[in-house]
Image 1 (cartoon, helix red, strand yellow):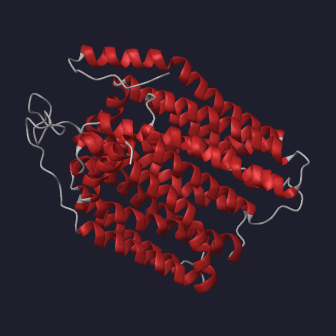
Image 2 (tube, rainbow, N blue to C red):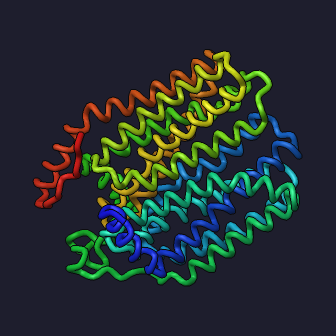
Image 3 (cartoon, rainbow, N blue to C red):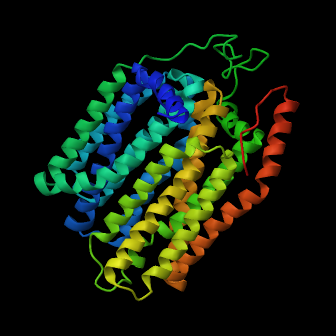
Length: 445
């Protein structure tokens, strides 16, 4: 075993021995797998059994996304102010009843209402989980903790759809919703073993237990001021601001393409019905592998994000060309599979380093608010992207749309690489001006 492998192994041991973290990751794994089963079962119920129109399926997507867009900052404030464990357990419990409710839904209006309520529970859970990781993991192990959490998400993306299809075939739609409800029960049981709110100690974090709720003069802060502190923190740290702008731009442009992937694949003569699923799994596999190895690179965070965005964008543009190029069907499928794998890896280079940066640079008592704000911003980009994608496909067609989206993503990465030095210098100057000593990120670029 070489020195790098020894350091990696020693870095993982404390996390594997951290019972609270392992319980939290167990909860995430079960709920993530259940989420994919839920999505597959719901699309089968509404799209195939009820024969919903395309705009009705789009409305379902909006019902899932809008609660995150609107409720992200408020959910973050709740996660910072109250016991994160209780928030997650309550969220899991409510989602159990929502999934049981889907079994008795008789029309799309009822489904929309249930999706909105479930979206509100989802938006409560996510920033609370991020804040809980910050609570229970030693700061020097945060990178490994984020890597494992991101890997679980991508592993679920790879296995979840296939498992969902298998369970649907074996047990039918109704039982799948019951199994999914059971997954959230198991998730809540894992969380019951995690300790409640961690009491902040003055001197250890530089904050008093009540700071973040009261100003320096002892007066209680207003609700809106507390929510706005997440935005202020991001705006005040140039490295975070650059990362947030980049990831929102990447999500916006890639969603233009992702939302129209079916229209692109329709252009392939005699296309296999399984090709789309394989390509989506390849994307998840690429992101998973990137999540496992990106931390080992000595490049700076912005360099990783810029290269990842540029690579993902160029690969997506290539996909559009491959679809309309005459070549043997098997070769075409292999090239598309490989392209989606590389695009997923590029996405991993954008997402995982940013999550590590966000976790390390955010104070524990503000973690949920910052993650809630970022979730809200990226959800806004995820809503706008498909709308722009639909308009471009209607006006230009799927191939030009994919080329535009791909080159747009690559351009975002290029701009970040161009300005990364200036952003990093401004970030260091900002830290020095605030009396904070910060070791610059290692970078060979």
